[in-house]
Length: 46
Image (cartoon, rainbow, N blue to C red; front, top):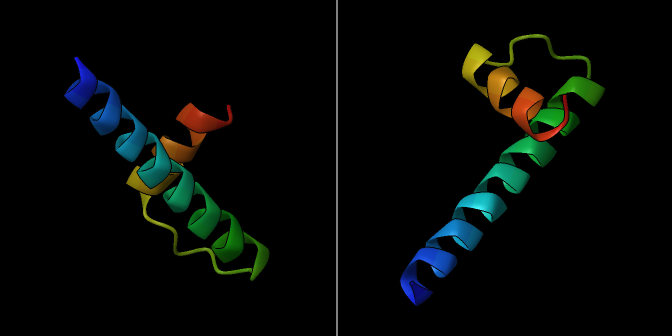
């Protein structure tokens, strides 16, 4: 169960990193963000 918690934290920090990256891409005006990233960010921040 400890390992599950660690994995979950790593997974969430991965999502956070991806979300940050997407946000920066969107702010720079680039519109070529992959659809899977957009789906992930909509899960984080609908």
